[in-house]
Image (tube, rainbow, N blue to C red; front, side):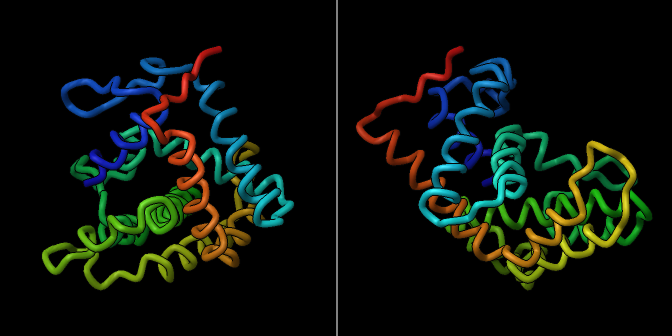
Length: 203
């Protein structure tokens, strides 16, 4: 399911440039700077112009989230002690419990990102991801996403490249609005793709 959705997203951006395993290289379809401009433009238009959200750090975070989740490996970045990827929220929570400090902060931020991405961009996928045979069957993605961002915001960091605590707390406080806005972002890029028109990502 996760790979299929990412394939769909990538085809919208550049046509089908996937390898046989369903994975993409960032340079296979467009420079990162071009993709950044594409998502930044849609997010700014959607959140600031249409929804009236004038918060550049928050909008920048959401556009960066989309860029990161284009890559298949982003979904698999959290791994357990045996090296296996934790792709279900239940497994990610277990890993968060086993970590301390900044490592714990990063896992909770990732849980927030994962739940926000699926809740906002592809909510129709949740039915299969939370089916009775899945570990996430009883997980409330919305509630867990809000909680994860909040926990991450309470773990202090002195690394300049880390997401500010204030942005993480804002993501927790406004999770529903962010999810709705990301759904509008999806509708906008699909609108642009109507009529089999491909978005050409060129410098």
